[in-house]
Amino acid sequence: MSTNLTPPSWFRRALDHRPRSFEVDVEGCRIHCRAWGERGRPLLVLVHGGGANSAWWDHIAPFFAATHHVIAPDLSGHGDSATRARYGLGIWSREVLAVATAADPSVRPVIVGHSMGGWVTSTAAIREGAEIDGIVVIDSPLRDRAPEEDHLRRARGRQEGYRTREAIVSRFRPVPSQDVILPYIADHIARESVRRKGLRWWWKFDPAIFSGSWLSEGPTEADTLENTFAQMPCRIAHLRCEHGAIDDDMAERIRQILQLRGPFVDLPEAGHHPMLDQPLSLVSTLRTLLEFWSIT
Image (tube, rainbow, N blue to C red; front, side):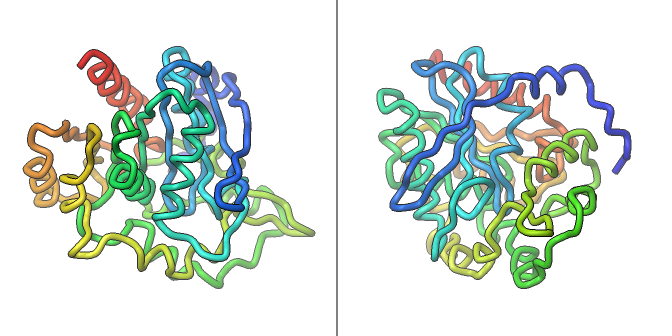
């Protein structure tokens, strides 16, 4: 990864569009959210992946603020939200739905979920698809476990904190790793993903999310995205990153499953985390999908 942190003008303009913050209580847990755009516009909810947080969307969401009311929640145990005794796809999906309702109960949202967030989004669509306008799943595998799972299991119990903010920021790495990361994006996300507690700096996630409760709740052979796509009453789109978690065989299977239900789109040259290496391609693709859905 290059060490040149000089950001281009588009990135500076995006970060200058600072989000509002609000909180929603969901089943006794405080959920923190970022928001851009005006209430009353079409609602767009952006759901981060495992171990990440809403700051991963800071340079993406402003591109939609002129046309949408954009909400990015921190799932419980992530970012600036509170923690729970137990985590799982079910409770995280209820958090996403509750946040959307709190943002604007009169509008059916489009929900975009990345990686583990794609499974959260899909779970929400299965349970309350009639209340959702559409979902976009970004590089979430069909049958495999969440791409974050192996690393998160290994990471449990290794949290010792860091002496300085610079020390922890320098250790930022996406999970799973990828060859290309735009350094100014990584630097911003890393700085938004840490907090000071006592004399040391820590990542903004609860190590308990790695305990296995939500991992064991993930799709099994009898309950995969392959089976659940057919149960979703809302519109569906799937974005596959060329160098991500979905191989060619799985990509072809997803195309067959979706058929006329929704588009399957390849993001060229993108790693599993397209907001880190192909952010403008991701923005353009999402804009195209939203425009198409708005007129059909």
